[in-house]
Length: 483
Ligand SMILES: Cc1cc2nc3c(=O)[nH]c(=O)nc-3n(C[C@H](O)[C@H](O)[C@H](O)COP(=O)(O)OP(=O)(O)OC[C@H]3O[C@@H](n4cnc5c(N)ncnc54)[C@H](O)[C@@H]3O)c2cc1C
Image (cartoon, rainbow, N blue to C red; front, side, top):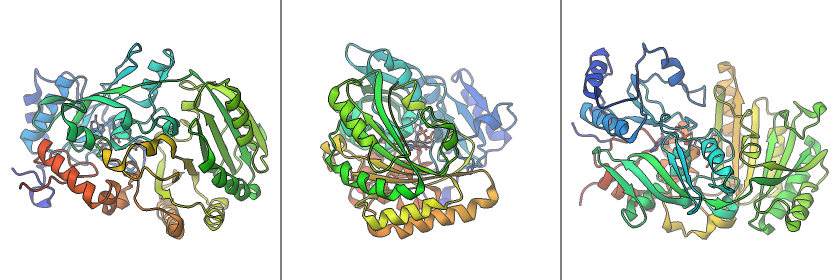
């Protein structure tokens, strides 16, 4: 069977007979759980972060080791199945879950080992950000990653990885030292900048197209464990003024500070939120000092940033990064709600764009938030052509992270979100962060992967390592034709 992206060679139907055949082939080779629709753990195992995704895999293979992954990949290839790969399950489009086919669930590979002397951290291919944060905190280290603890290391880092520490240390993929991978052929390889340079280039932004990563080794950075943060909250009427100041100051900041704005539908009960403001629609600005929490220049800057505009409440505090800061928004973005997100790079946060955003937010009925995240700094130190990840030059990142529970609201709430993104087009830059591509943006995959030239190069790497396009249940890179 030829494995290309056409529908002509659709995978075989996953019926009981095929399930039995797979179980027979795995006997003695696979130690993890084999989870079919009759398994008591099936319903829980098929859930992902976004409750809009309701996929029913024909079979889930929960791998516990590299050997399990090899066995699972060999079975997939042998049976003509195109496996989806599940790490943290946070992909908004639900790419982690196959609909009717085979899913390889990596959540049995979450071990983290820390070589503090050499500042190296190894993480299993199913690890979550919180697993890493917890393991490194006691060593005074961090691995720069995202902004909450439940996101999967694999999906996040293979698509780039943007987070609290990006301005100081760059993207998560910029910290790759080596990756153990199971290729479509079942071969296990170690990818480093020297051993497989083209593949290392492609893995820094090209996603799960090239094989199953069973172990990531990252370069860790010294930090903490305590972090100084400043938080300020603004009423709806004061939000535009604060955002104008925010937009003016962001370009002037040193890379030792990260600053995010969130237009929240309702303030959660965070430690610094007075009870009377819990549930109120407010703008929240969070400034983080990415260096010594007691350094006088950090204390001064965080105090200053927290006082811009006319805050209703302002607080600065020092919290443990892993156990505190990185879990602050976990509850707000817990699994199991209906989520719809849209991302855009901001070319210019002009006054008119701020007014449109504030107008949208001030009466948006859906829960969640509009985030305006400060980027820049070390992200842009890496040349555009040095990694598959693209659009490193943008200073601000806009993300609509909308949430609700009633399916009857889907069409209305998605429509509203699409409409504001369309309205903001004059101020939005080119490109899109591939990790945030939603189910209705599959026509933007080439754009998300850096445009036609980068996509063509990725296709050549794909042809070398996965010529049959076994790993296609993703933002797919089609293997370049031979010759
Ligand atoms: C609440 C929330 C917060 C987020 N915060 C951030 C953030 O701060 N910064 C940021 O950059 N992004 C963030 N994202 C986006 C995130 O990077 C993507 O959703 C990413 O896909 C999540 O990775 P995952 O492993 O959890 O996803 P999954 O849905 O499990 O997997 C996504 C894809 O990754 C690939 N994959 C998974 N495991 C492997 C593996 N072991 N080997 C090879 N490929 C694999 C597969 O192609 C799979 O389809 C966030 C998303 C959510 C929902």
